Image (cartoon, rainbow over all chains, first blue to last red; front, side, top):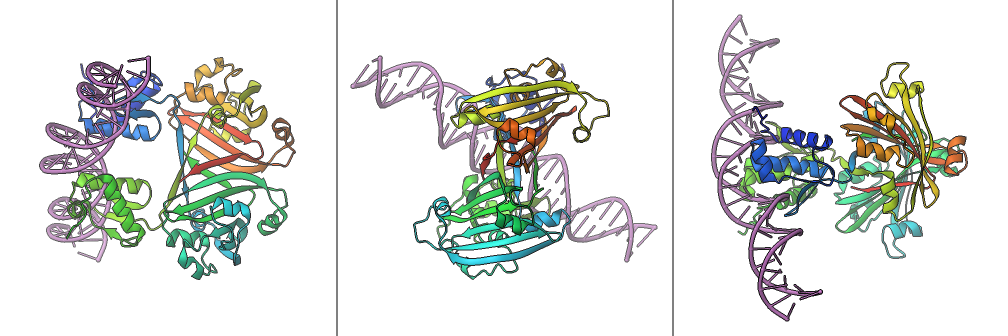
Length: 233
Length: 233
DNA sequence: TTTATTTATAAGTATATACATAATATCCTG
DNA sequence: CAGGATATTATGTATATACTTATAAATAAA
């Protein structure tokens, strides 16, 4: 009997994946433990561990100490999408990027923004509105609130030549954030800025970004009609 | 001198992250190699490797053999979003899920679909249209083409009680796919199905899914107004 | 019967060592 | 000096071993 040897974590992973897909190991089922698999595959346990860990991270396996490893009941697929600097996104498509600052003021945010950023009433924030252009056509309208109490040196930033989008990525380390995507009809102001008709469907990206001191910034990106966010999984 | 010891890969990762964020190691800069770091941190090289690999996967470090490890010039943040079965997505929000099959036919797809799925002219596909409802309100309109030459047993699937969305996830293993998100105004038919007005902004999800034999299915999900896709990063 | 306590187990991690691989740097040759 | 062979180097991976940690299950105590 010429059992193939699986001596790289990749080959082990492939074989495990095959068994999952072929239903040899059914969803919800307990699979052999690492020691048994390492014996069967003729490799070290660490190699099996590496392979299974990857599949667990991908959501195809559920692993728990002592309980063992089982095939995920609902193999949740994860798509990872990059969050690029808008300038790079445009330039990578071979288009000419241009940036235009529309306004930059210091004022108290409306209640919804204040609530979202969990701030006490009366807090003044840096409010920046800017337009990103691709090949001289309006591309993305950036409407951003920056917590200058967390990002102290933001007060000095002009945002006349570099967008807050890019400035923040470069200058402010952050720990995490959240994103939401929606579609809404353009309001008159957005329509004017993005050079489209009011009511046109706009792709909206809303992001909050925080570090250990709290929420740094919240931004609403209104993308011109035709915008497409693309990724693989 | 009481140099803290970093003897877990997590602590090493934290320390490296700290040095990146504090600009101790600047963007684009070469950092010490694994051997040096393991010496400095008082741990094994494998531990350093584990820590750095994670940061490289997250896009904060660029690593190349022989060339060494450097801090990413443009720390690309990645957001991972789950691709759930629509029923689960609805139920997890505590809403009542209902599903309704609108049509199920076998026919030749329009040219754009045929091109997208890379099929020869004259190929007939399974075309399924269905409506997913949340709390009895239209939620997502699913318009799907299934390659029955790749997914043979799909021809037998009724899709009367289980949606193609769920059926495919459960029954057909796949290797990968791509997703695109856009916003468009509802056409009259979509408006009627989703119970909104024509022109209302709809959030659109387009997915292609493939395995080793080719593209399995392509789907367009038109989400009712107000739909919000949410995730963290 | 319920509630602690112990124990056994499987994954998680750390380490030393060895070798593989990719890519740069260097040296040699024509 | 161009171009190819070769050495060098940093990451990548495999392995045996040992220990840690979470936790399910069994056992003892209340």
